[in-house]
Length: 159
Image (tube, rainbow, N blue to C red; front, top):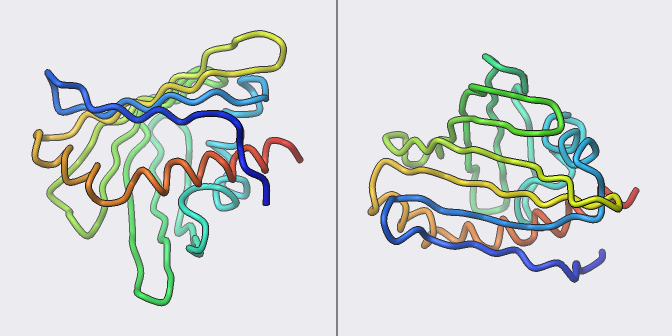
């Protein structure tokens, strides 16, 4: 296990129910993109350490969809959504639903920026239905999953 020296920044927008996540990676955009779109790689890094991940389906293309389940001794946590736009090495637009709160659907956009020298800046936004839903997402412990997931992604990208 390695620990990243990169900071993951998570911020709540004060004007709209949006969460913005920013993180830099020591890998080119094509490699970071592949790690987000190839289910064999996604299962290796998405989510916090200590949870097992099972992908029911993961069709990362414009018009595709996904469903995956994280599990531990306390239970299962399922998520699903649809891919609305997938542009190789550049962006992914998708919906995101935690099945434990099925009425809350977030619209997410992931943008990859080439910083040169084999580095990429990832900016992800999650637009929630309401400020209450956004605040519930932030209070759910998502920060641990995001930070640890990106540390795990560093490990995948280094291989």
